[in-house]
Length: 450
Image (cartoon, rainbow, N blue to C red):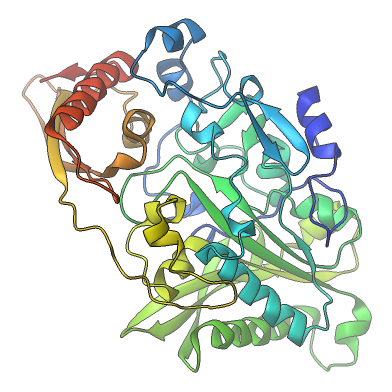
């Protein structure tokens, strides 16, 4: 892996792995809410180029020191297993670095490893399915280092060099050759090279995105991979691709029944850079079709490049938040990060699908902001500014009006919804937040307020 920074090599070689896995740092490509979903990194709504963001959005350390409105207490290190990562290793005064303080603080949270958390409960339910149906054949990796090389995150899983997913508008860059992983697929190539043939990878992943009830810059994915040798398909009467596809569909239909019960299912042909053929599995649940995951037969180029030239393999990816919100009736993705006992006490280890009982009736407060945009403006950059200031107090940012005047200048009006899940916000703090948002939007994004 072409990891340029020695601290990344040090961190990820030190063994951030579960007791069920062997030491590795790699990268695996399948799981947004899912990585295959239509709003995923590969089918992003905002098709924005790479070149503009790094110069307009980077923040110098001097500016950070002078902004008293920023969070006053930011941990100087986070721990991943027995590894400590310094904030300066992730949030840097570097023109290619676009990782804010708030994202750094999420690095060691690992919600998927908490057995009484909805994400941990769901992860363990999936583990139970694979353990029961495949005689504990699947290895489990769940604390691999989330700081990976650009090569591992993109090149090793065949993401084109000019693909929008590589944009600074979509991905958190530590430096020009190092990112916070956008998907657990960032570990696929190395695991294959190390000889693993049946594995599940679960972890926190990072993407710059819009703000609403289903999008958050940190979420959790699971990817599964199974590799076959010629002995597996040659006696079946099927060719390798047909055999692999059939096994994949049988596996995932069983997983869907394990999680959702006896539901109607359908397969949808689709496209992903790293599988061919590629599919999405949908189930009819709560009176509508729900996309559960994406999957497919792994591209041979990936296998050939990673010491498995004679093999075929399947891979799938799913987003834990996306499925947990459905299974537990959780209405807002921000709740997964809540430490409020009214949320955490509702869930118990091993109890999948307990329905969440809302406890917050606090109303939202709406603030509008209009400005003339420039050529480098993107909505993701705006959302990053708002998140960096308001944190989880911001519920949604939505474009409610735009127009272009006779001089060719374009104006956008955004409505920002502020709401706490745990308390009523005061007029004073909302006004203060909005004032800071306006100030920083104008300063960082070089827009002209109206």
